[in-house]
Amino acid sequence: MSAAELHAYQRRHPHLFPEVGQRPAPKGAGVPRSVSNGYASEALFQADAVEQLILRGWHVQETLKGSAGNSAVYVTPGWPDLVLYRAPRRIWFAELKQPGRKPSDAQLACHARLRAAGFRVVVAYFLSDLLAVEAEERA
Image (cartoon, rainbow, N blue to C red):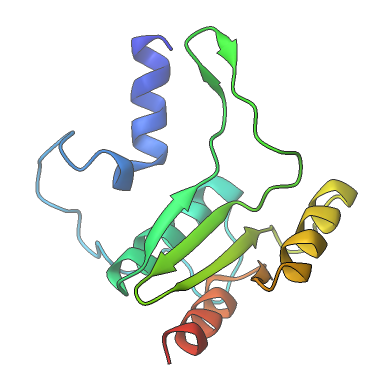
């Protein structure tokens, strides 16, 4: 990954690089960019979702995107965008989608396998929907 690509990735996923750019948080930091409306991209939706879930005490594992060095990074086709976990023994999965977009056939098949194994899989189109599920999981 070039320095420019790394910088762009860090800007899209600042929660993964807390040590980078230790400058004061912008006005409104910690407040989602959109709770009831859609986002310009799934990347922005995911960045806000991860930030809000971490603030609520969840550990969040994001599905890897892009490449490692100059080679491809392989993830099982259809694997959900986020794996969320916390003690004691709470784990669930979230697929984030733009309004009007539907999960692919590979995603639906993977979600079905995870549900058959007893896990909760949520497809969220809005941050408010995801946070409502988070509240249920926390309770």
